[in-house]
Length: 106
Length: 401
Ligand SMILES: Cc1cc2nc3c(=O)[nH]c(=O)nc-3n(C[C@H](O)[C@H](O)[C@H](O)COP(=O)(O)OP(=O)(O)OC[C@H]3O[C@@H](n4cnc5c(N)ncnc54)[C@H](O)[C@@H]3O)c2cc1C
Ligand code: FES
Image 1: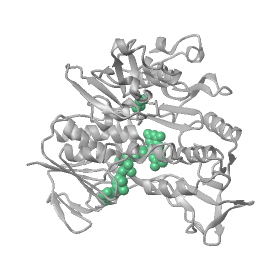
Image 2 (image 1 turned 45 degrees about the vertical axis):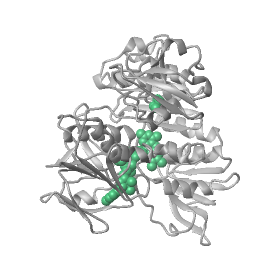
Image 3 (image 1 turned 90 degrees about the horizontal axis):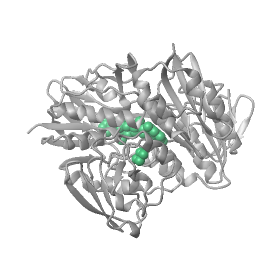
Image 4 (image 1 turned 180 degrees about the vertical axis):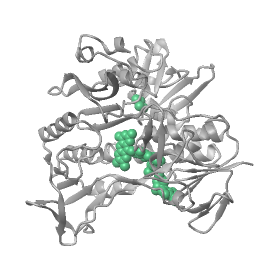
């Protein structure tokens, strides 16, 4: 289980508890986090689950696979800290993770 | 208080309700669906749900509690029987009638039936609903023989899933190539080869004469031979569910005819698989069977109902997961005059670009997310791109956008 905080573009934050084994995207959908759309349902085909990882968490997350990197390059305003939340699986190690939701998704 | 009634609790119906609340709509929302489950995603039904890798909760569009929290009434197991546009009221199957301010028809589509002798034998299935997937899933057992009738995306995905479960799989296609309705001959040939290389027996130009068996199906009878089968899944296309709309006098023509606002008549909207909509970028009407179409039309209708005039204007995109092959498609390739390959088919790592009169109109990408994503940005602009550049792997896709 991990408590994960989503910060919206307007600065408002919500922290939700996501069980181990789910993806961060699945947890966001369950908890109705605005801005995480997940059109393809986690198939790594749409990029609409894109978020920015708080810089201090970059080293903690397992690095993205090639199929994720490829999508991110063309996601809405990609940055160094961009990740697709459907490709991040929750473990205890992610407790406290902070993610910034982009202003738009493709 | 204004009331929106949504007929059909699938991908598009569920998303319409969600989007209405996101858009700040404060009226009553009632979603009536004839299936007993809250809105769910169908794509996993031929993929990870079918092989048991994904649980039911992960397939639901939102957890059931979401609807109560957002003041959305879910009437499950309750079909809309008819509606009267002039009185703005619907009648549910039990006879209850409800008045609406706006009605959204999101009735989806149903599998086209293959009517040949023996088609009512046991263990012959179609795949559309969760119930179908559960029934098929039970029969997908290692060592047994599955025959898939129809080489479309859904059939090929089922074949790949069943192969992964250790079954003997045969795909029977009546036309001379699989995916004939949706892609170029080069892609059909590639997928035929890919399935064969992974152990699927693909038979082309093979029509079904009948099914034989002893209560349960035992064989698929074709012109030249009978293919032994323990399980058959038929995937030969879909028919839009337009009956509800048509019987209320709403114009239909292979889909409920909507305008770019997703409106079918005054205070009546239609979204998803059941519609035929005008696409300004392509200059013609389309009927699509895709999640993108269901979700984006839902968002458009919701915005219009909530008071923000919005048009649906998108280039279609779609994905299909088979074996280790991630296919992602954008645009409509029909009418192309030039096809360009980038990357290697042998390595299962390539994209095909389709050009018409020098303009890029569509792309199919296999394990090539960059090509797919770049084309999602490029294709709506109909750019003129040098085919030589497209094929040149030393030029990154980023530079073409
Ligand atoms: C196995 C499978 C795999 C797929 N894979 C992909 C994929 O990889 N990518 C992709 O983009 N798309 C895929 N699709 C297509 C995609 O799932 C559909 O385009 C999408 O579900 C359409 O949503 P919809 O809401 O219009 O229809 P549906 O999801 O079918 O929902 C319509 C609902 O309305 C109900 N209904 C009908 N009539 C009435 C009535 N009178 N009253 C009440 N309820 C009614 C139906 O029972 C159904 O529950 C797949 C489809 C299937 C079946
Ligand atoms: S949900 Fe589509 S890429 Fe993550």
